[in-house]
Structure formats: C-alpha cells, structure tokens
Length: 321
Ligand code: UDP
Picture 1 (tube, rainbow, N blue to C red):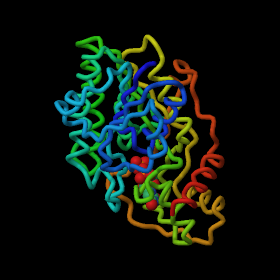
Picture 2 (picture 1 turned 120 degrees about the vertical axis):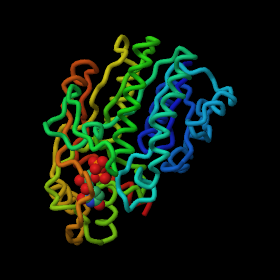
Picture 3 (picture 1 turned 45 degrees about the horizontal axis):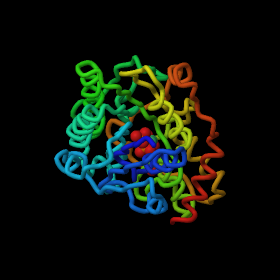
Picture 4 (picture 1 turned 45 degrees about the vertical axis):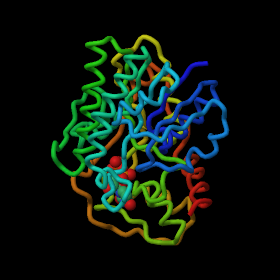
C-alpha cells in the first residue's frame, strides 16, 4: 500500500482529497493545525484504519520528524489559509504571518521530507499568483501582475515563493515535484464563515439576507466544483515523467459576480435582494484559467456543471447553517 501525506488534509479541498485517496487504496496521513480548517471535515474518516490524523503545524520540521510518520510515497502540500475576505477570521488577511510562514518555511520542510523519503511532491499554488491579470484567459506562461506588498501579497507572494522553492528542489536535487495553480473552487465543506463569494451568497440567500456583491460585480471568476478539482490534483500527482510541471486546474466557464449572484438567487429561490458593497483592495478584475495544458497532459477537464455543483453545495449549507 502506498502512503500519501496531505498537509492541510482537514481543509476544504484537502478533506475531499483525503477521502478520495482512501477510497482508491492509499494510506493517508493527514497533517493539519485547524487554523482555518475544521475537525468536522475529517471526523467521518477517523475510524478508517488507513487514515491517520496528526495535529501539526508544518512550519515545525523537527516536530514532523520526531513523530516518526510512515514514510511517504507522495506529499501534497495544501496547507495554507486561502480566503482573501477581510471580514472573515479564517482569512489570510487575519493570518498574514502564518500564511507567509506556511508557504515558505512549511514548503521548505515538506520539500526536505520529500527529498529524504524520495517521495513525489505536489505544491498547491493558486490563480492568485497571476494577481490582477492583464490577459485572459490566463495560461501558465503568464508571469502575472501582483502588488508585492498589498493586502493580498502575503498569499500571492507566499505562493510565488512556494513555486520558486519547489522549482529549486527540482533543479538542484532532481526532486519529482509538480505545481497545481488552483482557480476558484467550491462545494460542500467550505467553512460557513470563510468569506468566499460562493459560501457567502448561498448562506445569505438561505437566510433571506441581502446578497453582498462587492463593487459593481463586474469582476469575473470561474468556479470549479470540488470533485473535479480533486480528480485534477490526483491526476497531476500520479502522472509520471513531469517533474517541474506547472498546470492550471479550474473551470474555464467565466461569470461576472453580479451574474453569479442572480444564479444563486434562482437556485435557492430566495427573496433576498442584491446589495452593493465596497470593492476590496487589489480585487482581481478577471480570472479564467486556460486549461489547454491540463487537457493535453492530464486528459482532464471539469465535468460538473455550475448548476449541478451549486445544487449540491446549497443542499450541504441547508444542513449546516
Ligand atoms: N465577493 C463578493 N461578495 C462576497 C464575497 C466576495 O462580491 O460576499 C467578490 C470578491 O470581491 C471577488 C469575488 O467575489 O471579486 C471572489 O471572491 P472570493 O473571496 O470568493 O475569492 P477570490 O477569487 O477573490 O480569491
């Protein structure tokens, strides 16, 4: 049986990935410190004999080593705060130093662990490394347009550093590493108070409160359902012969945020109105992945429609709010 470490394995995407890999016959070692994730995301996995949970901040490498974990064949690094919403206590705005640490020192520690174990490594990068892009859709060859010290920089520059150090290990040590640039992803197990647009709009709609569109809502995003993302991440990790590969994973169907609010209104059948609030600083105006590389190399593209994915997500939030 092959062993997978998932740093951030109790997070939104990490917990779905943990479940998927357990179902596919892997031993899963989940490392998480719950700063922005939730214990409830993995409670259903705890009785599985192939699942081990380690309460661990990955910036502390001696502690990782001292725990004498089963040697990994694969290491996924998904540990990081990821919400930009300044109103959320789970956002990277609330944890700026931790965000920089987990993507720099945390990535270094896991790269060392991968090198020592001769394991394959996947770094969860992000569409945020493109910043406020000047071209759309964004291909992997685009270098981005990032404010290096703005409010979002702790995440954007943290992830850019994470990519740089991952590539340094590929070049210097021939580490078999790859990077996924993850675009907006949604689905069950997003935290209620995460502050992301999908969870905010659904919760507001279900509570009959106004849907809070930031700015005029003319900015665009492209939303990928979590099961598609998990399949993409798994294919990227399991694909042989692509050390140093950088691949966008996301759904190329783009929506204006105000249009997205209308879709949520229709699917929830809410009577809530749409209200307009202040646009956050450095909020990207457009975001849409070019997924040519994922299609060609991984034979991957999203298969869950926005309506189908939102219906499942709405059903989940009805249960938990
Ligand atoms: N947004 C919004 N209302 C909300 C939360 C977010 O209009 O309640 C907007 C936000 O300004 C951004 C987009 O929706 O333009 C996506 O925001 P999110 O926080 O989900 O992630 P981002 O793509 O900015 O990282």
